[in-house]
Image (cartoon, rainbow, N blue to C red; front, side):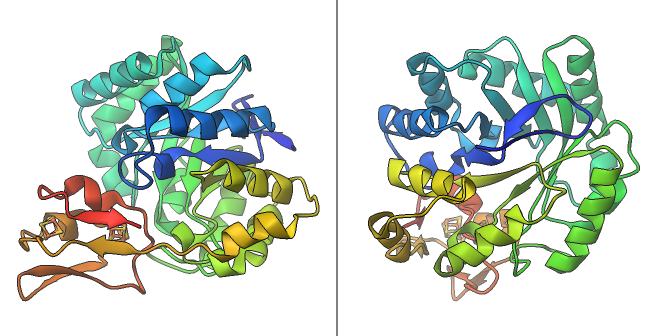
Length: 316
Ligand code: SF4
Ligand code: SF4
């Protein structure tokens, strides 16, 4: 496994980052022990970097994996949507407690879109800066699906880490193409920002072009690590082999080839529209009193399911 230092932070991470969204209640809904085993498999195979978020609800899986493994120096990145100082304080406390750690390596403002949204979260970011001064967090920054946020972040010294969405088709980028995003990623990297990408497989939409999609991100020299969501030990093995440029056996490939993912909205949807309001891709519309998903825009992130009061959205 190749390791890189994230920008000017001194934090050393594996090129492959374990994206934990997939094991948790928004997607795979694995049992804690089962999910922890998948995380442990990644750690055993050289992955030292785990991406999570308060909203993913996967801290308990990671806590269990940390307890089970003998491997030390695991780098954890989390994120919060908090916009107030107190809200972010609560998010940090919650992360420390549920992860069972005294320090979090990376903490980000979740899904920032522009300078305007970043400024709107100014108090929360101040809290991150203070937590960093106290040594509770090592490095701070933003995650984003927007080219504009990366463009702005380049010039904000307090942002040390950027976690942008990037894949060869630009699926999920809200305000531009993959090429546009790459231009800004390069500038950010040259300005000393630590960059780790997300959704190289477009949330599963690019799974049929697995090699092309992974080769694309691995050839970008400005991205130190790439988070990929995994929910089985076989998927971990396959991704590790791919990142290590090893020959992948057909048996593992067939797992990927047979994979399909889709968003299912159960028939008891009451058309309240809460999911539509929260979808980062604006992929849901309420038609005739029911939520309807535009498959072209949906990146299968599963975020909408956490907002449904009727528990009727699933990624299957
Ligand atoms: S939040 Fe749930 S119940 Fe409301 S519209 Fe969306 S799917 Fe239907
Ligand atoms: S519809 Fe749901 S799964 Fe699809 S992009 Fe929107 S939030 Fe994500």
